[in-house]
Length: 107
Length: 122
Image (cartoon, rainbow over all chains, first blue to last red; front, side):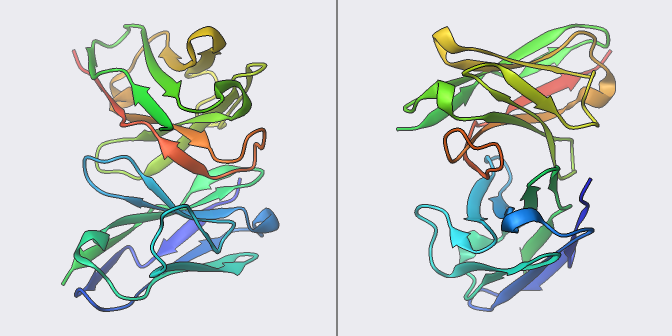
């Protein structure tokens, strides 16, 4: 099973700042089968990025993903008030696993 | 509109059985995989398993194999997650989610149900 380790656990930032989240895999993720989700309390998770770098339908371009192999990065270029949430990476290749999440909180 | 609508919150006792549902609409139910995801209180997301409604091909995470059963009824475009004997540790929010590209197992989840809260307490 591929283990995904996200860092940092919590990111304290102000609106307008840049957020950079990391997701490291214990072994190479096949064909960049790596997704990023946003999860807010009381809501269902929302797909933001799939294939490591492709934005899902309707996702603003301030959200971006990059990386391959074992190291992936998710970036929010300028934080909007509605972006404060927990973000999960997910490997959807041969073993389907989530990272433990990164909470992006208001500083 | 593509939607997954889940059944309502459940409160059960240890040892009870339970079946929760996920009603799909707005797309071809038989051609997209449906997954179930657990979130225990204060914890992260866990992938439980997945079903392809066309032929009921079902796969489970090793952590959930033998603990739950995933099924689907094509005639009413509904997927299910069931337990034969609940434990207090099954207390969690459960989400169903559709995989985004029809027919492909290796796929992100683009449409999610609203979640079903299951509470197991004596």
